[in-house]
Image (tube, rainbow, N blue to C red):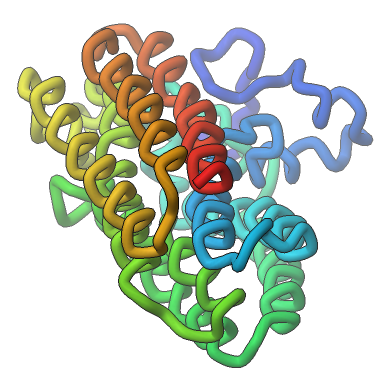
Length: 306
C-alpha cells in the first residue's frame, strides 16, 4: 500500500498518459479525477461502447438513430468512469502493490476514498439521467447491469477467470441497445452479447499479461496466469467463438451479404492479434489490446453495410 506517498507518473511504469490532451487542458485540480475516470485512456470507453453501437445498428430498421448513438456514447463515457471509480476503490490495496497501477489517484494518495465515492455517485446519477430517457423495458435492462458491475472487482480474488465476469458486465450494451430500439429482446442481441463475452476473454487476457508477475507475487488471479503458455491457443478459441456468434447475430437480424464480407475482415484482425502478440512484452500486449478499437469499427461498418 502506498497511500499518502506521491508517485512520479512520468517515471513510473504506468499506463497513465500525463501528456494526454484531456489532462493538459484541464485545470490541475481536475486532473486526478480525470485520471480516476480514465479519460486519458479512452480504449475502455470504446470497448464498453462497441456492443451498444453494434446492437443499435442491428436493431435499426434502416440507418441507426444518431440521437441514440450520441446518448449511448455519452453514457459509455460516464459509466466507464463510474466503473473505474468503483474498481479503484475496491482494489486500492492491490493497486498499490502492482507497478503499473501504483500511480493511480487512490493508491498514490492524490484522492481519498471518500472523494472518489462522491465522484462515482455524481457520475452514476448522470448515467441514470441518460438511462431514464429510454423506454421502460430498456430502463429495467440497464438497471440489471448494476449487479455484474458491482461484483466484477472482487472476482480476481476468488476465480482464475475474472475476465469472464468483466465480459458479462462490459457487453451488457448488446442487450441494452436492442432494448432501447425495440422495447424487447431477441436472439440477435443475445448472440451478440455472448459473443462479446468471448471477445472480452480474448482481449482482457492479453491485457492481463502485463501484470502477471506482480499478480503472482500478491496472489491475484487472472486468465493470463491460469492459461500461461497456453494463452495463444486459447485466444484462437475465444476469438473463433466470438466471430461465430457475432456472425450468427447478423444472420438472426437478417443482414445481407456485405455484413459477412465485413466479418471476414474482422476475423483477419482477430487472427493478427492471436498470431503476433508477445505475451512477455507488456508494451506489445497493450498495443494489441488497444487494436480492438479497430475491430470495433470493422464490425460496426459490417453491420451498417449489411
